[in-house]
Length: 125
Image 1 (cartoon, rainbow, N blue to C red):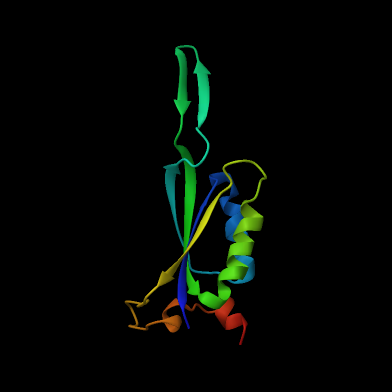
Image 2 (cartoon, rainbow, N blue to C red):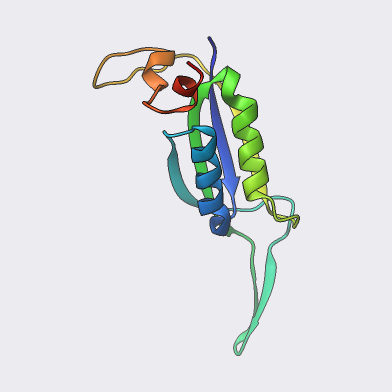
């Protein structure tokens, strides 16, 4: 069974919606970090008392998930639905191959290393 890595860069205000949507489909393990970035947009111009300036690196959240290949579509669909606002800057989702996964505490490898009690894989049994 192939393993994949999903990186979803989303608006920070949509994070709670995305986290809930992932939990609802059975994604338990994830890593999240804050970042700043820009995409196709040129940012926004802000006007203040001292003049104007452009903010071209906007705050974003990155959600990282390692999962079985069979669960990629359900996970991507959950992220897309929860992160969608219909405006520019909703984010991007990247899917990468993962060669191996090793859980340090138990030395489990592969699929068993990424499974959690009650997660998307164990719900299928």
